[in-house]
Amino acid sequence: MTMVRLSELTIGQMGIIEDVEAEEHFRQRLQSLGFRIGKEVRLIRQALFGGPLHVRIGSVNVLPYWECPIPVNQLFSTV
Image (tube, rainbow, N blue to C red; front, side, top):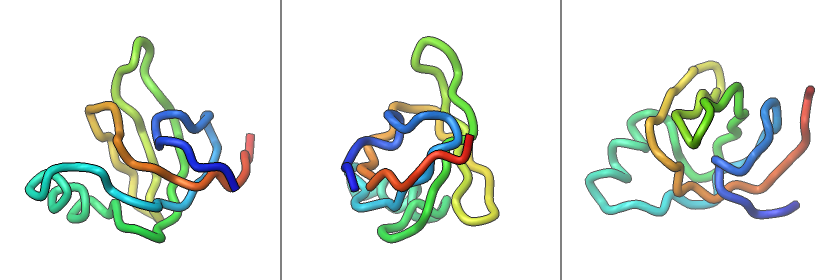
């Protein structure tokens, strides 16, 4: 498996969260949204010009509005 940032996944591709690289208060917010080590994520869509991502964590859809500093192991693409 290859390690990339969440924002580098292609649409439809899945990955496993390996780490959450953020300051403590921001990390806690991400964890409350479901971004936890070992969780499976799928990139649903990405806005143009580095805009927000739409990701699915389990059965929950999340739209983080930033360049996601979250390393994931690429799994496969379902597109």
